[in-house]
Length: 458
Figure 1 (cartoon, one colour):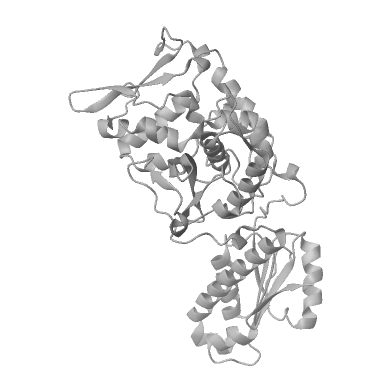
Figure 2 (cartoon, rainbow, N blue to C red):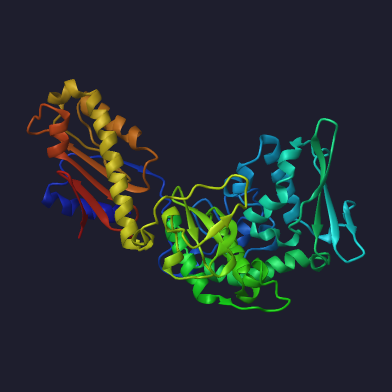
């Protein structure tokens, strides 16, 4: 990046960009993902030993594909579970422990708290008291409903009111879940999750880590709905995520559970919804994208049912899946904002970065407003070894701007300040002689700012 940026700076002298420079840089962490789908695939073993994650991915936003069984048994980050957010502190502790135990369920562990019933099903009891967790009965009563609505991997527990025991103070000591017979076999639950993974990975391959949540939802929705079929298939669990993500066939329940799981894998909060429509009983999702909740119906497909707000909900009458329901956005998401392109992303990042830097520079200069007459120019450039040596005020401004912009960008950044005309105020100086250059990486465009305008250098 050093050589390329230096060449650009040499050329930019012809348009007056490089007259006085303050430049700072943070460690480069730009994510490569535009070239091929493979750039978003990680070595799954790299994260296999991680504890609770934001989602099955890394800190840069890559999505895990072809995950291992160990990874698929990890809980999602607490903030992705809407049901958890409605519980007390003790209830949330119980939630974390119960989810951990349920996702790791495997009869090969020879549990002493798993009872095989005469009908082939199982009775799985989790001891909260032994784990040092105090949870109120009012929370535990909601667990089955909240778990099923918050994590599509809970297809291996019956959606019944679970049993529990409590002490004299009303705190729950143990909670019991019923496991269907099909998952009472050794590794049956893990094998089912692994069987879903090939199709899940195919759908997740459309995600670019630079996408907004809304862009992720739109891309996943189009891929998912175009590769699924609505069908009744006896014995194929078409009403849950298994049928949808193993066989690509499902009814509305399977469609919605399957899409919810894919969204959660992409780090997007989603819940499972049911209700009534003109076609009868139905299922769909609520999705949180870019800070707002929206309605999505993957079964009915088409953009007509993608990221809709409250004003569009005339055909779906919800039944409350949670005691407190999320508040939908009043208006629909503008679907033009869900279209992702690398070019638009680069421009957006450059604009946001430059606007942030302008604000930081203004703050620094305002601290030195009484010393503007002492400023002629300030120059510092990194990541090269070029060193600017100015007077005391210029050096102070250089250091303060460097500190102010630290951590606000990736790549390289130049900030040019000149006061050859001896402007009397900070606003005049910024308006006429502040110049900024920004590049996120060697393979992204170089943007510059001058006299209120941001443009790509070509």
